[in-house]
Image (cartoon, rainbow, N blue to C red; front, side, top):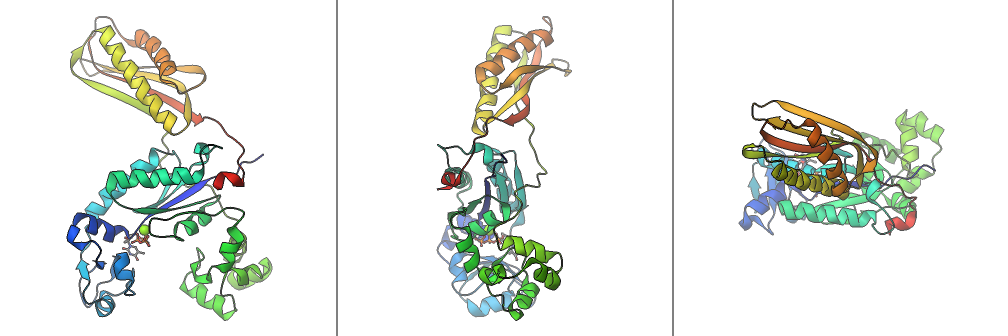
Length: 357
Ligand code: TTP
Ligand code: MG
């Protein structure tokens, strides 16, 4: 049986504007517009939710925004700050899943299929991720959870800000049918106009069309739209940053040659690696011990385990033996590390619609 995936789409709320409000307490609760300040040429990058009430939105000429919201706080973007916040968010994502596909500075898809079980719903994982982001950055986000990417993205936009929304087999058609056609992913302004001229105003209208007719009108995209009207889409992430191993190492303040002490450190490191694996429900088949001698030479030794392992004591068991193989008795070392690689998901379970609820 092919198991259905669980995809989360996370998107920060009013990203640039929220960061400005975080860093300038006097901006909080007020309309903040981030963008080019030039009255003649600038455009709005984003606006706080307070400013959106005035009709201000991304990509609007700043001059129009001034007319709609003359008392707003207009600020220039600070891209370096936004980038560093983005990195913090990505670190949170990677602490949950190897499978992360960033879409822009403030949003990403995560495949969290492996984390979900009867006791742990995808929604609870999403809430934990949002909580971790808030603890780390003091910023709020919204999440969407579903069984493919485009539905997860639609879901994250449904209850912004601070939303957590699930699209499952039981509510998908109702949501899609009610959706204005311009909100469908992949429908830009031009397509939207053409749709309207064909009397396709929402998902329900789109659903009424044959695939062949959509292809005739919209070319290859017609097939994709046909599927999107039915909740069908890809759940494969384009992962450009797959972390294939988990390792921890320690550099000593001075060269050390005390086996008992080094092994104590190695044991601690093994448990830290285990915590990391446990958090993401991974297990690995290869343990590697690395050490650097006082003359900066690196030595490694690795071993295949009989079964995939993840427990601290098991990792240390292998690390202990590897250490004795690689360590020269007379050679002090300055660094010790342990890595578990050849990772795999710990267990699959068959999921049902109830895992979403
Ligand atoms: P979005 O996620 O589209 O918007 P947002 O985070 O500001 O608001 P929300 O998600 O709550 O609706 O974009 C993320 C950031 O990218 C946004 O804060 C600023 C920047 N951006 C632009 O610079 N120009 C644009 O046209 C858009 C859409 C975004
Ligand atoms: Mg956003």
